[in-house]
Image (cartoon, rainbow, N blue to C red; front, side, top):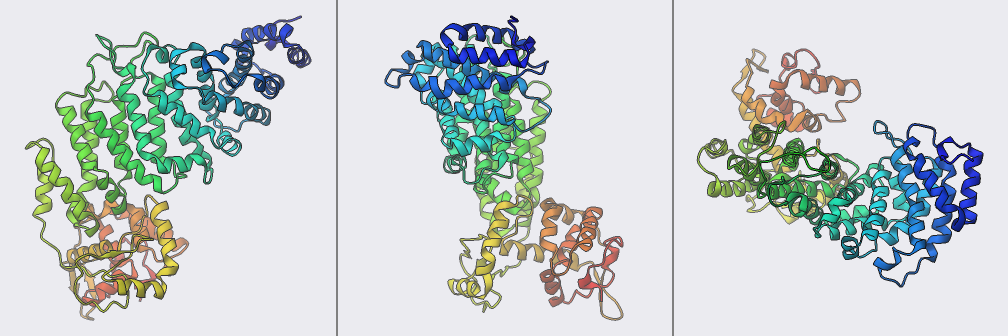
Length: 613
């Protein structure tokens, strides 16, 4: 009889598996030995995993329930029946790991899914093991290690997260709880058995569940209610794990797997649009808190390779990734508001200070200059909003600047110039932006009242708010709220911000308006790049959202309009002012509308129907 499973026929494998099921005392040990000898060939040949799964399903259904439940974790895990169950469970681990292709995300076949589902009760019990037992007992740590591997490997398949969430909704929160509780332990056991890697991967599992857009899952609810815990655990791993605080001459290293898992978990918060909208604000808070925590850490200059991997992994790639993610999120006033509330400017200042003072010594390719460059990109993205003085941002900028005044040394980076530019900007005219179209416009309110539903409409009084609700805002409120929460790029502006931008653009282009003989107005020699710089960072998508009225533009017309925006970046401010009904009405009331040749500004790409006559 052939001993190696990879060399057997399907009939021979089925017979061997049946013998191990019927008489495990006599045949199981021999079967497992043959299986282990065949593992080196499992990824290079058409290995018959599906024929091994009946053994897994049998043990999980018949043998696992016989393990006593009234014994301490350090005792029942040593029982022969427990050891056999775990040995069979390893077949599930290996099948997920060895079958995976790193280049292709694909569905897990039905036989694999059935076997995985049969293992869920076993995995749930393992996650109930006391963390102290895991930290002190090798059997417990080995078993948990295998379960964590299944959790991490299963995320490589596109259909597993939804299946697990539906069949065992408490499993992902249990994995998170175990990871959180184990993160406070320190000891060589975690490094020795690579448990830290797999526990870190469990945090990524939480994020991967959203890849399949599982609606109202327990994980989604948990993350919404505990965003602070996520950042504390993620950054706690960086700050307190022994592999970052080794004594003597050893370098504070992250294993490649751990570093990758932490970054991947944070990246999923940044880019996974299927997350609940309320988490996006939590992500910016996580980013900024992570940056401030990193700025306070001390790192060894020596980045030599570790004994286990022979390769040193630079943990300071993390701040650069976080800075880039923060920079990409600044795509409109609403996101800038969230960033300032999360103290982004202060976080950037502290990271910059840590680099200047030598607290961070990133190795190539992430040099200190890279961190400075990323900080500068963030400041440049925020600069137009500092100058525009949007009402929703004024107070937040002032709060950040008060901190900078107290902690920033003269000439440290570009803060002084930015603050001077902002404070020297002349005050603009008072903007009346009550969202009630029938507002009597009486006394300027001391505080504008904001709609608590959409958080976009603003009113001068409770009377106007109630009147606008009855006049139609009740039908629009839910749609505006959905647009604000679900769109990270085309988020609508608040009422006063919109009116402020119209006034700003109107004042900027009024000097370039000339009268013709027929008393119409034309724009002459308009090329204000400074104004374009201040408006353009809202992104073309933001301008489209503000400008394109579905009642005016649709289909090919809207496509042509987008092409015009991309072709004329320096004049996007003029487009912004002219290409909306409200903007045109506002300009007309000031006597500078009726522009007939504004198509010249658009380089002949498109003349909107609104101005065709």
